[in-house]
Length: 230
Image 1 (cartoon, rainbow, N blue to C red):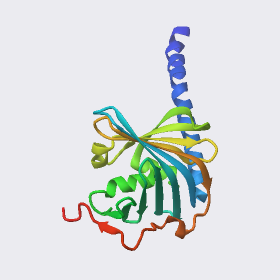
Image 2 (tube, helix red, strand yellow):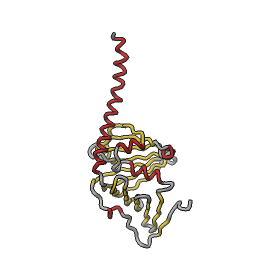
Image 3 (cartoon, rainbow, N blue to C red):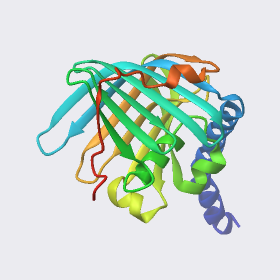
Image 4 (tube, one colour):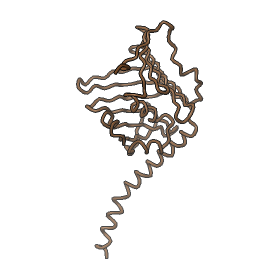
């Protein structure tokens, strides 16, 4: 009887870690859903690291970020980079605008075309999306506990289900705050070994007014439309 029961016991023991991981992932989803139900926006400091694998070089930008969600699918993100080179980036609706104060120029991109998928995924990742939306677009796996800027988080990995997106961005990672259920760090992997990491600190969840996510530029700023004629 002992020998007959042994395979069943071994299988049960092997299944326990997987069951535990599934339960832990469900806990993360529960925190995400709780945060999504009341999320209206936040303000925070941002540090963005862009890694180029071919030359093993990092570019670091820092500044402030403001996020506003007026409706579930209506998100505006304004990033004001201060160092090393000042620039302002506004992602809102179907447009991406980047203002370069040194040359007083604005580059405007149409997000309904070639940048649509990347923009949609950026807006989906950790900014008020619920677990159903994440699981619909990604295969989500649990990586485990991690500390980001002194804050306890749980790291989850996301593999895009959209084949076109996966060709360019095969993997995403989110560090979900154990306290707030909001992503305090995001990592986007590009094909070829490049990646971007954005870390958010001093985050203040709030109902952000529309005026705080407007791109304020001089009237004489030159506006350009890269890629519009493609």
